[in-house]
Image (cartoon, rainbow, N blue to C red; front, side):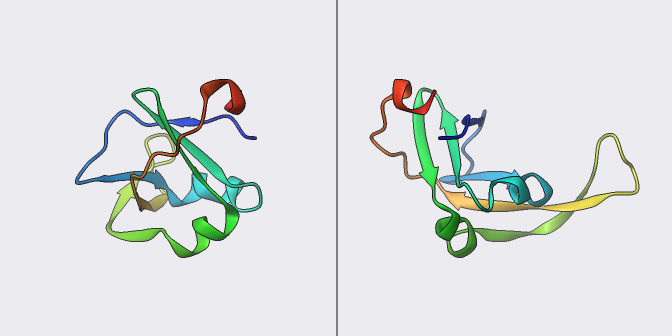
Length: 85
């Protein structure tokens, strides 16, 4: 299983990831971690459960690059941390 992506904030019951970061998880799935809880999304979930944000953001290091955030409803799984590592 992949290393969890640490999330600092859950906003309005959702977690977000930049669309360009999501690309590397499309074939293996993605696990979010927030406050000791985990949520795993399968490759199928990544395609069907994410909602595109309306706002475009400018990349911090590459000022010419714009991206959107993809939002997922926060529903932590009952996974043990040792299974994820």
